[in-house]
Image (cartoon, rainbow, N blue to C red):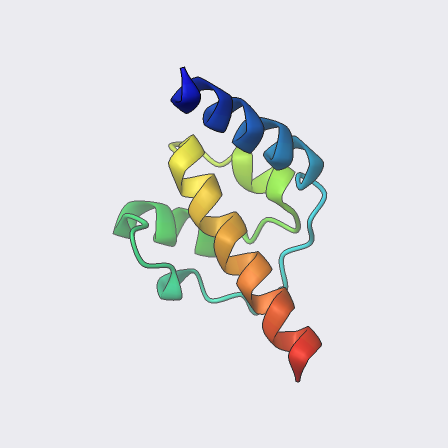
Length: 81
C-alpha cells in the first residue's frame, strides 16, 4: 500500500515539473542508469523541457525520473555556487 502512495506522489510531482527547462548544453551521457539508446534519442531531440522529453519515443517513467533528478541536482549546484 505504501508503494502505491509513493508512486502517486512521484507522478504528481512529475506533472508539476513538466515545464522544467532543460539547458541546451545538457549532457545526457552523464545520466547514470539511462540506456544508451535513450541517451542518443534525447541528445538528438534536444527537448527544451521535461514535457517534451516525455514525448521522445521509448522514454519510460523511470527514465524521466532519472532526468528530473539530474536536472534538479544541477539546479541545486548552480544555486550554491
